[in-house]
Amino acid sequence: MMNLNPTSKQQTFDEAKQSALALRDDIEKTLPSEYVTDSTDADNLIPCDEAGDTGQYDGTRTIRVADGFDRSSWIDSVAATFSADGGWTVSKQVAADGSSDATSGLSLRSEAGYYVRIDEVSDAGQGAPAIILSASSPCATL
Image (tube, rainbow, N blue to C red; front, top):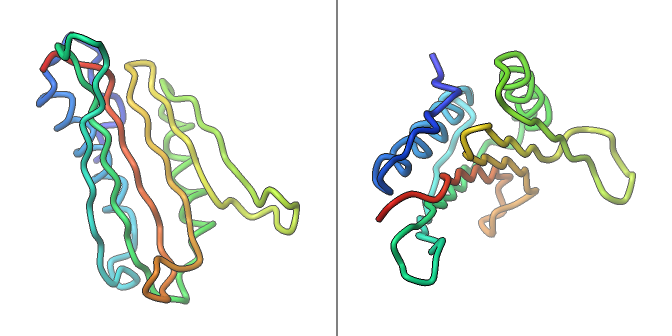
């Protein structure tokens, strides 16, 4: 069961990061494992103030998937889950050039300040289609 509503109480950076990672992992677990070929992670700390007292976690996972996987349908199912749960602003993206009305991206923003973005790309540099799954925490005490 996904924890779709991380707390908005004052958290340390590590607590906020763990909540963002759990959210990202829970979403990834909804991908049918037979379509996932591999994944890579990139983690960043974004300063929230000049003094360096607070920071925001931002992590991206690039998930390469098999050619036959319907990424748009999967993104639509994630959107439906978050829409039904409440507490999230759900924004879908489609092709900017109007060539398709299939969902190609999704932005999720929680009332607690968490932000999740899902983008599908036709290839991730290795010639395989991929899903880019990013999760950010609200600013928290370092």
